[in-house]
Amino acid sequence: MDPELEHIKVFDRLNELVKNYHSTRAKGSFVEYHPPEDLAEILNPEALSEPLNWDRLFEWVERYLKYSLKTGHPKFVNRMWSGANLPSVVGEIITAVTNTSACTYESAPVSTIIEKYMINEMLELVGFKDGEGQMTTGSSNANMIAMMVARDRVNRDIKRKGLFGSRELYAYVGNDSHYSMDKAATVLGIGTDHLIKVPLDEQGRMRPDFLEESIGCVKQQGGLPFFVGATAGTTVRGAYDSIEDLLRLRQKYGFWLHVDGAWGGAAVLSPGLRNQYLSGIEETDSFTFDFHKMPGTNLICNILLLNGFPGALRQSCSIGDSSYIFREESEKEEFNLGSFSLQCGRRVDALKWFLDWKFYGHEGFARRIEHYLQLSKYAERVVEETPELEMVVPRESFNTCFRFKTPYGVSGNHFNLTLRTRLYRDAENMVGFGYIGSDLCLRLLITNPVSTKDTVRSFFRDVVQAGKALLEET
Ligand SMILES: *Cc1c(COP(=O)(O)O)cnc(C)c1O
Image (cartoon, rainbow, N blue to C red; front, side):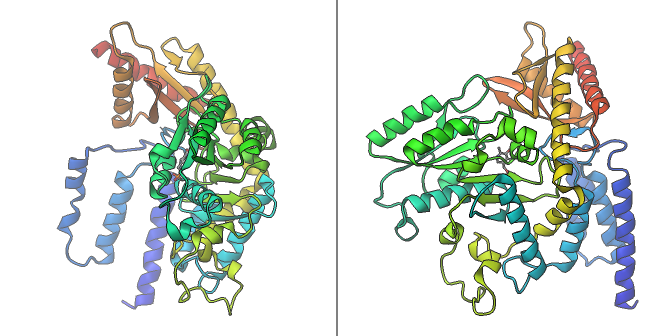
């Protein structure tokens, strides 16, 4: 067959599959579960060593779709994201067919302009002045880059000399901060002994009094407290550290104040929720949030924003001889986004983000996040009104941490974990879990635009039904 004709047929087939997948993403079962050994046998990837023709290749595509989770299904409430916005799916497909690296203007002119535009939109939205930013591979990396910039600003020799012989650096985060902070501390050579986990108050927020006390101790012993990472929406509880309390301490001690808003930072999109949860955000030094979580853009879509340190990203991220790729004579360096990134090749993440932004608008995203909060409030009420269920802690924001009540003599942790696993394997629903202190809780996260009060009610109905059945067997 004429290769061009063949390619057209490939796209027709692909289009058909994508259409079918999309139109059934919220219907039927969200998973056909098989244990890993069984799935490996069913898929049998080794068997196909011959080069495949298109027919056989598409069998693989269909197999992939059949055994994958439908993350756009309302019963998938496990992660901080679900499904993906359609405009961003369009963006991803175009990104795939135009395959390029967003590191230089020459190789990615349109995405460069779009990314810079979007970063400026976000800087303006957050209220950062003379700021800069970049799309990264996720908040984990954004947290590390923020810590790195803070580290490099406090000691300008570190890039050259490393940490050898320098004053000991200390970073602070709340006890429920994301594990990426620990990774950042290890990667950057700061070490987890120098990442101090500040105790939390009743609501799961970093205690500023403990933070100040520890900063005092560290300074007395000759250490240098250089970085405080606030969390805006902790992973399990959804607690927001008080930015204003931390700003007061920054004034006194001069550390870098970063806000990890991977999950709850999306509240910045709604003026009301920003007031409620992120008051003072415009005064912080850096802020990251994931557009691939509540806002629903295709994975991965993250932004790191810096407030008022022009050139700081480049100073930290650029090193070594990159003259083969970044040539300033033809373009202004600020248009070569790779020159202030830790990556060399950069995936084009900007197009999907831009299309979403233009399609839904600031207003649309604000309404969406507000809707999720309303549904979370509703979920809490349902738990409180359901005799079989209880909240493990009161709701702080978007996370509903609950569990099935167990009678005396039955371990609540074991029971709820078993319940959760059973719900998943039976394709009832997929809900997350986590520990608050020593108590295991089931964590409901609502991030699906198709969610309604009805889907919330039916979620809890399924949990109660499965819980009762399990209790009878126990
Ligand atoms: C999800 C999350 C992260 C990690 O973000 P990635 O984009 O997945 O790397 C970091 N911090 C918090 C609070 C999160 O919820």
